[in-house]
Image 1 (cartoon, rainbow, N blue to C red):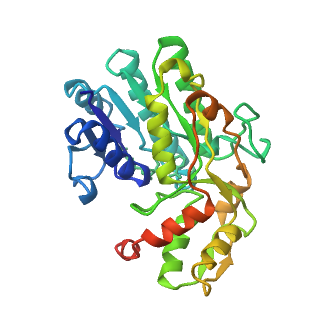
Image 2 (image 1 turned 180 degrees about the vertical axis):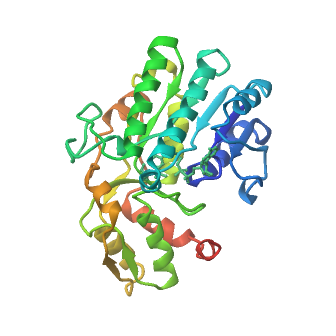
Image 3 (image 1 turned 180 degrees about the horizontal axis):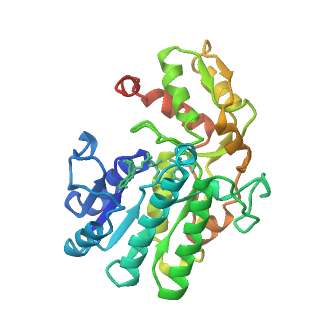
Amino acid sequence: MKKIIIIGACGQIGTELVLNLRVKHGNDNVYAADLHADCPEKLVGGPYVQMDILKKEEVRDFIISEEISEVYLLAALLSATAEKNPAFAWQLNMDGLFTILDLAKEGYLDKIFWPSSIAVFGPTTPQRNTPQLTVMEPTTVYGISKQAGERWCEYYFNNYGVDVRSIRYPGLISYTSLPGGGTTDYAVDIFYQAKLGNDFSCFLAEDTALPMMYMEDAIRATIELMEAPKENVNIRSSYNLSGCSFSPKEISDEIKKHIPDFDISYTPDFRQEIADTWPGSIDDSRAREDWAWQERYDLSMLVKTMLDNVDVNMISEI
Ligand code: NAD
Ligand code: SER
């Protein structure tokens, strides 16, 4: 059995990815790693290690000594948080990637998953049905780090044969853990307020449509890409991926079908400027052609699933 590590395992994606990979590969073969000293309750079913991706030698020693063969590198600062500390965001988002790419280049790893984002696009990118190959002039440090990361992934594949695979995730919507400081976080927060019976003040304007995806689709896409035959993975920068696109008004209208009294107001803040540079929808035909990607959740399924499952106690805990 191969051994896998997910670095940044306690975050919004990591929590669900670890659980899914443990079902597939066995609890003992899937390590969860994150900064926190204690393993979160959701991840206690398998090995957990406290790890700082910026401590290069410790990361290398662990991966080599435990004979890990696959890394999912999720540790990063997301778009909104990164803008508050650009220098550190650049360091975290880039240095960790090099540590893992170099381990693969030296022959210690068979495969790497590293996520990119719709943030690689910018104000000069075509906004609708954004193509896989297009103008990319990101204006946020997060977007710049993801675009640079994509270039380095492709470089390591072309020059050293490193099997690194990547998806440009849209905004991800889930209920098992809270989002970590992105521009799309409103589309998760809104469900907690709706379920609490509160009105919701949105930090984006009502008509700001962004590409989004329900987490189950994102996890399935990640695993499908990682399991695809090597020769089918023709894009070694990062794949466009589309779930459903919606604006704050459209998601609130859908919530109102279940909670008619729900009300939303709009108070755009600095995240509006970020959102204004991102696409409204994505063309993911390359993912469909290369590894048969097909989303399952549309907006109405996503909203029903979230309303059925969000636990409002999670936000009272923070
Ligand atoms: P998150 O902020 O929820 O989780 C990130 C995790 O990384 C946290 O648990 C954090 O403690 C950990 N971490 C931070 N610094 C670390 C370090 N030095 N060493 C080890 N762990 C560290 O983020 P997420 O939403 O799960 O995103 C994971 C990845 O997916 C990121 O690269 C992000 O850019 C990308 N992505 C996410 C989305 C989304 O909507 N969630 C969209 C596009 C791309
Ligand atoms: N959801 C992420 C963010 O808003 C997109 O990468 O930062």
